[in-house]
Image (cartoon, rainbow, N blue to C red; front, side, top):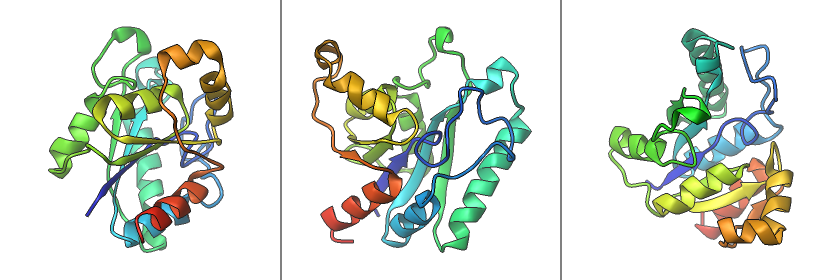
Length: 188
């Protein structure tokens, strides 16, 4: 079964500059839950890799985060899909840890936990950090225009960004659109 990696905020659920602090703040992007279930039912092992510095900032607790993730998993299961694992970095950007994207520690953790290589896996994200982590680890980055995606796309199209990230990246309206393309591309 192939592995597929998703960012969370801005890809699966609506993002917020004030952080997603509790289940009441968490709202899936239309079509994203069904898209995850469709990919899962087509044979993909779904993993989520997400930066969650709100933990270190004290904006929410580990229990709050686990409650959000349990809700996400339950919603995907209602459509007949499964999320194999949700991997998060709790650290602040300035801590310089190895797990905060664009570093690749979350991808190594996914490999170790799921006993499967992430090399060549699709990685759907909305930020430059997602694309950088995916490329650095040998994944196939895909950009969605939800969340920070429109700003990321504009940044990638600027001359300055091309020095930081020269790779051509497929761009999709949202996760549902990306999932359709993945399923067509892979014959699912």
